[in-house]
Image 1 (cartoon, helix red, strand yellow):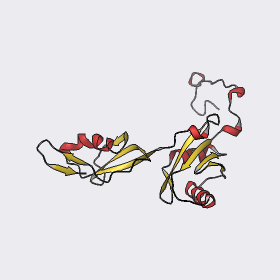
Image 2 (cartoon, rainbow, N blue to C red):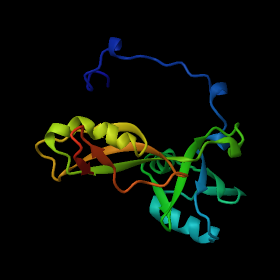
Image 3 (cartoon, rainbow, N blue to C red):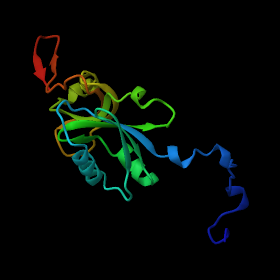
Image 4 (cartoon, one colour):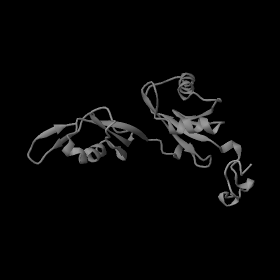
Length: 185
């Protein structure tokens, strides 16, 4: 069969795995979630909406811990990866921050106050493209700046930033040139 696949013995690497080192099923694919909302809401509708948004293959076991704080146990790796990687998520316009959970740390000690989002910086003149990252840094920690390419449509730059949910977002940032001319982005 190896010959049919075009493999040779030297192409194979073995990884030795001790079953005792595997985490028990109870702590696999877990997460901690916080709903950043100030008004009362129904947990039933929260989970109903999130399950629909997540489109899971299997149900998720949720455990309320405190106001707006939950542990989540997923039963399929694909479900866990989708929820962890395809956010950001929201419920009624309020951020739902989800972080992986090891089952050992106290859930209340898991930091759930930052959110990774894409922002757009519009109408930047070509000669000022080098200022896109400093402009984005005024919103949050810059994780990645998408460069404009020929096949890109739109008059804006996309920047992936980590924001603190306790700080209000900025709608516009001004850039003041040394000559005293103000430009708003």
